[in-house]
Image (tube, rainbow, N blue to C red; front, side, top):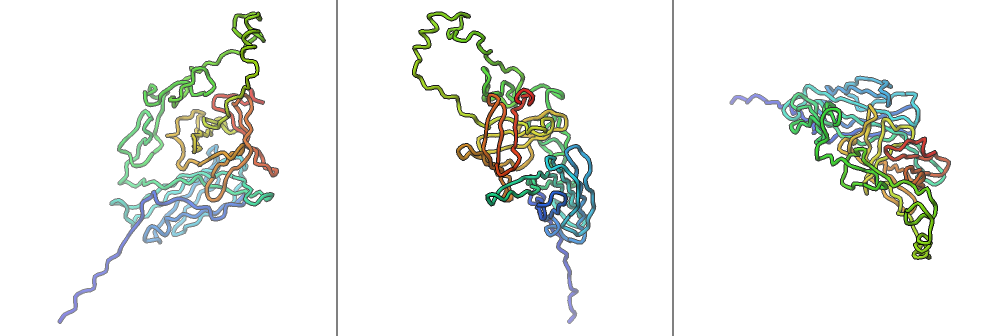
Length: 341
């Protein structure tokens, strides 16, 4: 009896791109970093995994570029101001692996910022912290396009964002969905439903006649009676809140934080214009208040914790972590920092 020929089957597999994100392996040194990409063991055959890495600063200057084969780690030294942001892009390709009916091409675009925390009281520690972005499928089986629903050229069929989005008012009129209006809570015509500020905010001018309670441009008996009518009343200012849109001092043209009740979204810009939180980077940071202390979760065991001190009529906020660490200073969107010195 003859023997049947032995059949060999080669199983080539890969996981979905959105299951991949970068991990800091060595990130506690100011001038050197080592990152780990999990795609190296999630995509087979591993010997054909190619990773194209690019690191830039906030101005687009290249800090490091490298193409690695069958290597899950990238490491390099650099000279970067600790107040700057480092952007990282890595494209994983494998022509022999199969994902969604075609060769693998997964792109991860993330950023790193230097965060100082005091996990042990009296011992501040700094580290480069990743934003936590996930990979996207950019293979030929995927369709690139604008994936932001409020953009002028939103493409509902796009499977990954190709950076082509355009926004009002330059490329199209403000759609109703943007709900343009006054977004400043202390304005007379504040609109809580507005997502975009349209410049219509108005404020009541300061009284130039002290003692003129009834606003008739004269201090008379009527004003005295009005004052006596509220004599003994305890007045309190409305509580200050971080909810709203803020620029970190020194980065007004490229970075904006939008605080909701529980999350801090980060929105970047290359031209000084900032959209809604639909344009924020993935992975907003949870935050909360503990008395007068604000606590912002920076992920991977890191947090920004410090005394919150409002000033400039609530238009400026300073977060002081103590322990000799530099404070974080925020200005509300639309406020000139020079007016709040």
